[in-house]
Image (cartoon, rainbow, N blue to C red; front, side, top):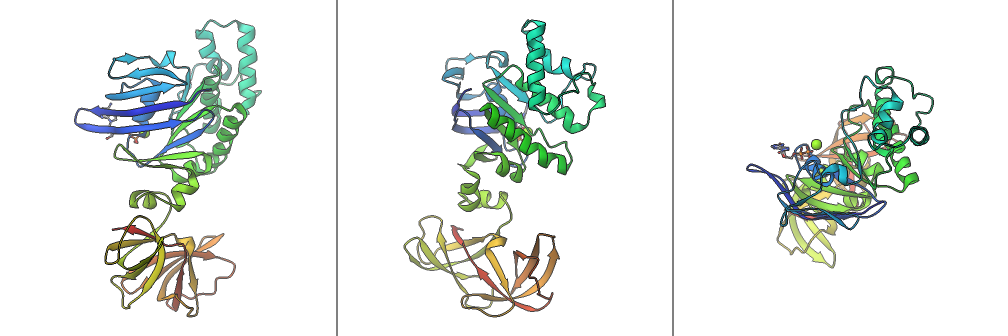
Length: 359
Ligand SMILES: Nc1ncnc2c1ncn2[C@@H]1O[C@H](COP(=O)(O)OP(=O)(O)O)[C@@H](O)[C@H]1O
Ligand SMILES: [Mg+2]
């Protein structure tokens, strides 16, 4: 097991700054995801940790050992870093059966056959592939093939497991169950995991902490709850789940709260929210509110904002509402069981847990 420390790591490909000023510590036994849109630098960061890519600046430590340092030109190749890695494409050898695929890293190290057999059996049980050791990859489903890749990454008992979008080629249902399987394996082994994904739900379900990236830069690091409930900026708020942004002006502040006059709708409409940063009356601001923290009411209520229900969509477990506030459109959700609202009818929006962000 190992912790991982990156200090001021950056990577340039010509003029492209793939990763910039990346400084983070991943603790021993922790499951950390690198999350962000395509091209934000996740894979490059992971490859720098693995040693497949040399950083332009900075230092990388794996378990107190310096494995990469741009200043002294120190660079340990991947095979000296004691890591396991799983990629998006299954990358299992098609001509080798499951046993040979999984045992390969041990065979290369010259381990004796009996020991290899023991270790392979053990890791196949861990990923629920026991009994399939004689099958060829072509005789396995996509999910099983990806579990072979996972078993192969784990068989040499690496200190650190790196996974790069390992589930993105699987169908939705399998992806969902594999999330839990990977997490379960990580817990049982107590292994440190760095997991790359562009799928926020995946990162939320699996991670102890999430590092959100955009255009090479870390935008926020925190627990799934931190990231969802107190996003550091508009990018993070927008990337993690659905959120409404409504523009306005700060009318007054009181401690950590502020009252905002909404812009662009007949009013005045004033809403109270938690101030995201130091701001003063008169500032242009953005109100951020998650759909699930806006209740759609069929009657007026104190503080609720009048609007009109444009559209409602039944999602099984909940309703998805689109409500017009003047020219603005707000998305809200509510329980499907008690939905009695008609499209086109007047409604009142009761905003809760509003965050007031700088414009
Ligand atoms: N070998 C490379 N040569 C040139 N540019 C690259 C190379 N690898 C990645 N990039 C660029 O670096 C940026 C980050 O890429 P990457 O780390 O693969 O992002 P992600 O995994 O988040 O989608 C992108 O703009 C990508 O085009
Ligand atoms: Mg990538």
